[in-house]
Length: 249
Image (cartoon, rainbow, N blue to C red):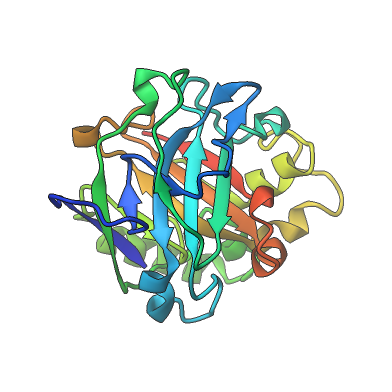
């Protein structure tokens, strides 16, 4: 589904939001990476998105909160990048508090707030993806499909935030990179490791966050930040097993 941004005068506690301050239980620790606070990126009220989640990939209720370390700005291709982001799940019924960012959070990790409103939309498997490779279609059909995607993308929206579905990649395949890096191998150089590449198709997009310059959110050169999860860990709600990819023009 697509997440549209809207400016509102007041942000309801627990509502879906890009930037601003997170709503978390008072006892939930603010995530950090080796003592450096992560920036709050977005939160998703799952009660608002459940009707658009046709596969039931996410819980019907609760709050998903996304954080990322903006100073280092890891790309996700190095196994050592683990820890540079966090996905937190707050169960329904928990008492939320609008949290102030830690004093150690840099100015570059503080964003203005925009409301996120989910809308249903179609997404397509990217040509440069492990999922597309697994289809084993003929070169002729692949060329035709690529042409269709090119025509559909002639006038892309300026900003595209997504929850679930397929990503809008800027620099090629992310599924294989997530599979390799999460297993301890360089995401771009060790792709021949036996037994690892086959599982790449099982990675699923969790959240795509586009650059939103008006609130101070920019990923490299007009890039995008992608949160991924393996389908099995997504089904088990192992949010700590998420992986991140950063791509830009």
